[in-house]
Structures are given as structure tokens and as C-alpha cells.
Amino acid sequence: MAFQISGIIQHIGNTESIPYQDKVFKKRELVLDCSYRNQFTGQIERANYPKFEFTGNHVDDLNGFNMGDIVTVSFSLNGSRSEKDGQVRYFTNVQGYKIEKYQSRYNQQQGGNQTAQEANGNQPTPTQGACQSAQQAAMESARAASAANFPPAVDANENPIQGNNDDLPF
Figure 1: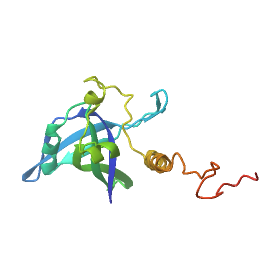
Figure 2: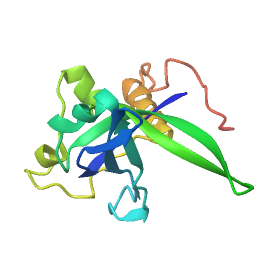
Figure 3: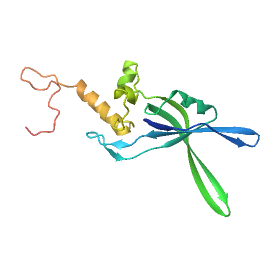
């Protein structure tokens, strides 16, 4: 199953070459800052720093990115089971396979994209909202819907044209 998350790049690791049988396995780590922040103060309410592993041909995908860039990472979760000395252990690997510059809904409509440095005058700060959660997306669409209907159309007596749709008893 594939997932996506957006955040600010905190760390891009060096490419590691690991010999495996008669081949060389390449991997590279990426860490994002996807911390949950107070919408008014920008203070971190809950830290969240997921680490992704890019492998094989995807290690070179990280070359065009820098610390502080706001990106969207597509990834999959892969689990494995290992049994050693009678003990069973489970491992989860967060496998990144695509990375791209983050585009907000506004920037997608305008055809642009923006890094944390550009948003802050070339000074990345952790107060930038990095992760786009479902709640934030719902709030954006609700704001857009309410903005489209504001101010409401009224008749000559300043009553809403759509009728009395409210639940008020007066």
C-alpha cells in the first residue's frame, strides 16, 4: 500500500553501499520534520520526524533536494518477520520511492512551488506548517465553500434568497 506525507527536510544521508551476495545494495536515508504545530503560535505540540529509506535507483532521487526544502514523499510500509534462537521479531521498513517539491493547493492552481527558504526570505524555520493532514485539507475546503457563499444573496428586505434554512425559532 502506498502513502504520502509532506514535511521539511531535516536530514539527507549519504549513499551507503552494502555488499550482498555478488551484488552491491545501495540505500540512503531521509528525515522529514512533520511535527504538529499550534496554528496560532507555531510551537511544536507533538514532534514527528519520520525516517525514510530510499534504495536502489531511488537513492539518486534525493540529489536535487536540500535541508529546509518542503517536499512530499511517496512511500510504502514493508514488514518482515525474523526468527532467531527461537524468538520471533518483526520489523517495519518505511520505503521511500518518490520525492517532489511540495505544492499547496493554492500553488498548484497558480502553477508554482515554494521552499521553506523562499517562504521565509531564505531562512528556514520550523514554524512553517509542513504536514498537510486530512483535517487541514477539510478546513481548507470548508473555508473555500463558505467564502464562495459569502456574502449571501438577499432580497429587498435583506432576507436570504435561499429561504430560511437556519434552525432559529425567530
